[in-house]
Length: 73
Image (tube, rainbow, N blue to C red; front, side, top):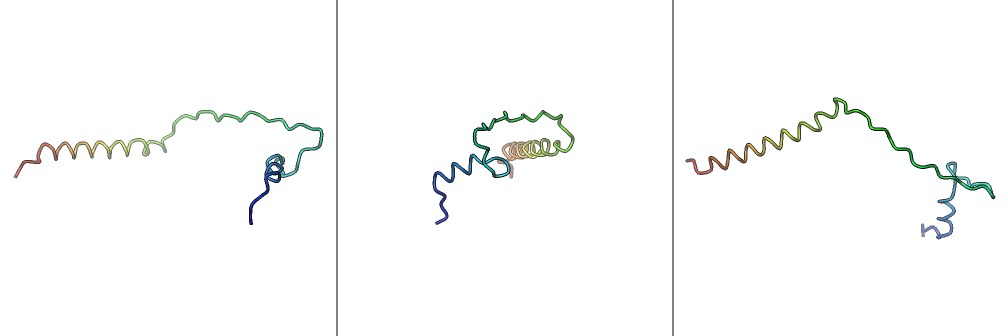
């Protein structure tokens, strides 16, 4: 139930972009995957880089303060 026979899976994988099989006698050529060009960092990424660093710094300072003052009464 719901399982595709092995040979049907192979046919589906060989189908072209429109779901059609290539013409007999024609080889499908594979193009190498295009790599995306690196884009310069924009300002929208700054909060994602700075805010976690600030939270980590605040945690370290808070733990340091607690460690220094743990015996105060």
